[in-house]
Length: 368
Image (cartoon, rainbow, N blue to C red; front, top):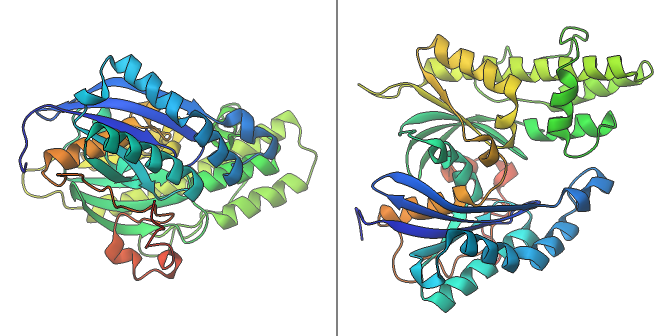
């Protein structure tokens, strides 16, 4: 199977947080064709709590997973016999939701006699820019998804080296928590971005944590605390809310751009290779952040790549893509990863993670 060149058709399933998604993707000669792409969100279920409730999320996944897969298969116009494999997120994520997606995928794979591919959700985000067109290896990656915020060197499929990460809150968490303390509702990121458009980014002098510290590690907990203190100093008028959001977002942009500049200075794409800088994950949909990162990439003579907006947040197309890429590389044969377990924590660069106490638990997930 190694070096497979025939067309591969993969069903992908994603259920790691609060989106239940299924997609059918065809990979042929390096060209990606998305045959179906279905995403069900759980915004209404979690909005009253201004955050994702794991038990509610798992129940919602269980109620709609089968229907979501069936809708994707109808949209693709194929049968299960036409598939070459079934891929599902197997971590990291909320373990209840991950188990629902995995069990659904495994059941389909067994019934159809197809290989099952256990996919790292973060690898899905890492490859997601390839859904929008050509984004060849190698590239520098800023992964900003949910509770994850890290710079990685991506040399090829499965070849990831972590260069730096947040030491506390991730960017997405900082956006959501800022929105919650300002009463902007859920999801927080888009709400903060909307208010920031009419605000003054210089109204508040918020800190830029770790900007002067060597390396690529980041911190956003102190920035969130600074916003909370500023918000408590005076009544939250519409103008003040907009200024708080704009100033907060400007601080985030400065930190990410500053660290990106340092990362680009040290990144060697190799002789004859173009400099490619990728941003992926839910926060990659923020236009101010994209613009700041694009400016840094251009300053170094490179280009910024990002997924299509629909595929910045959690989706099954990126999961199907990882499954197809792994099959094309000859990594999957027979029943595939049918014995794989769900992993609440699953770092892309496990060599670095084993030296990080924050990842020490959960590396061996429960069997699905």
